Every structure is written in C-alpha cells, then in structure tokens.
Image 1: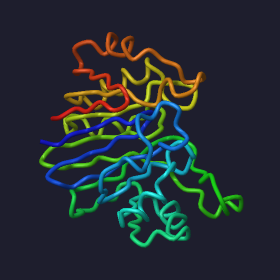
Image 2: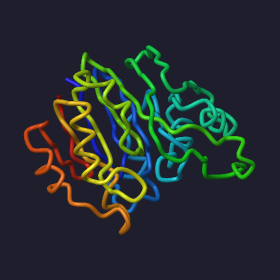
Image 3: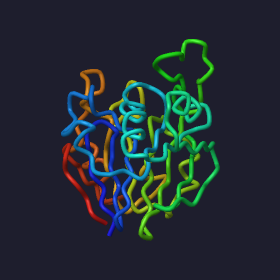
Image 4: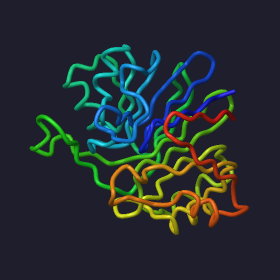
Length: 229
C-alpha cells in the first residue's frame, strides 16, 4: 500500500515497497515544515515541479546526500546537474518514463518558470512548470504543482486515486477553482496544499472540503501526517 506523507506547503513524500521519493522538498526555509532535510529517510528520487525557491528548496542537497535521481523539466534538470547532482533525469510536458520506483508522467501546469538561485539571472534555466502523475504499487498520485485551473486537467478524469492541489490563491488556484479542478479530474481523494505557509496564501482547507462535498473524499493533512491508499 503506497503511503503519502505531507511535510508542509507542497512537499510530499511517497513511499511503497521500500522505494521512496519526495516532491518539491521545500523544508529548510519552510516555516510550516515538520522536519528538516536531514530527517528524511533514504530517497530514490526527488521530483521538482518548477524552480521557485519554495519548490526547488533542498532538492540539490538531498539528491547529493542520497544519490537520488532528480526528475525535472529539462532546463531545471540542467540547472541541478550544473550544481553537481550526478543523477539527473530530464523530462518535458507530455512525456512519461518508467523508473525503478514507479511510472512518472509530466503534465501541464500554468505558472511561472524562472529558476531562483545562483547563476539563474541570465534566464538560461527558465523552464516550463509542470505537474506529475506518479504511479506506484498500482495507485496513482497527481501532484498538480503550482497551477491555475486548466482544461487539460480533464484529460486525467477517472485516472487518479489521489490528487494533491493548491488552494491558497494569489499565486495558484484558490478554493473555488480548486473545487472545479476536482470536478474535472474526479479523483477518489483530494488533498489540499500550498496554503497557510505565508499570510498571502492563507486559506481554510475545511471550506474547501465543504465545497467539494461528495465529488471526492477530502483528506486534510497537517505537516507530518500520512495517508495510506
């Protein structure tokens, strides 16, 4: 049974059968994270949706420490490789790949793509943001990344067990659009993310749960909490 653990903001750890990956490991500078990067167990992969600091986070450090593979859009993967990460797997929107830990498909997200950090000022590493559809143990998790509501979400209708999606508004979907995203995808379970980390993205996850109603089961995870499915 796969297990999804929330570490605050948009960071999720996914584990099944002794394989473990983390998505958007914003931990060190995250005021709501339950752990720092040193507390994560051994990682097989680090998936990054885009280069903003609250998503790229500790990815390079973690990949180096664990010998984990960074999976990211091409330009962001190149950035990580240039920072000394040995195992980098670049992808782009619409592509998929079978890894030893499971299957990954990279899907559309509508957001900014600048990579924040050293040597990024030239724009060389600016890339398309993305979401991920990850299949492990026969179960599928759709991590939308930071995104607006998009019609492309309907292409995943009925194919998702767990959908992790932002509700914080301002930089991403707010609650109203997130509810429509659940309508589009029809996941079995919806888990809200990217809210409450900073004042500008304060949102009430229980209001989201109420508005989703019977469209899906809504599981609200506090940092450090896990959900098995």
